[in-house]
Image 1 (cartoon, helix red, strand yellow):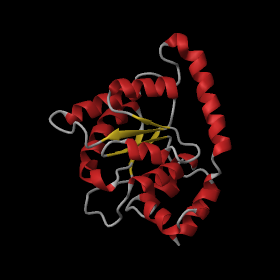
Image 2 (cartoon, one colour):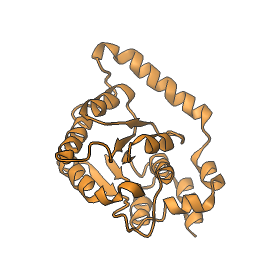
Image 3 (tube, helix red, strand yellow):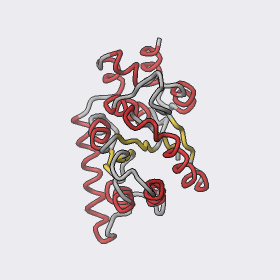
Image 4 (cartoon, helix red, strand yellow):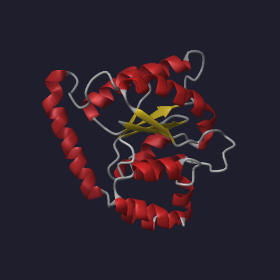
Length: 212
């Protein structure tokens, strides 16, 4: 699995700790981590939580990433921004129970964490436990198991609803404010990671046009 990590500007100083904790959990499982920043609060390219949503949508819809791990101060803004886009199903995850139930019940492709809440002694332990619970079992099996069939049915219904209520990603990229989108894709490592992993040429071309 290709996992993208994205931090917005208010929580950028925590990026290194979050990335290190994530890699310790997922690399032994064979997953790859792509850290799209922000890497510090002083980065030239500053990401808002709205731009986190744009970047998440580009990565998921282009298949450059299978899972996005992101957040903001409360996690709410990042979650709402991510869910504004087609193809993205982002859960608000505070603790390991949230992480596990999101994978089993909702079977989404992004999580938003509250990086400013409860961020004290032992914060990296909670992060580690959250990341562990994302990968203890195959996603989408249902919880509790006797609820698996209706939960899987509801997930499919939600996916179908989003196909109708959201337009396609290329159209979005061409019609959103150009500078807003350009800011979302101008991170230090974006082009290196994205173009190496993008599997949808139309989205790659739209991004190249924005960056030109």
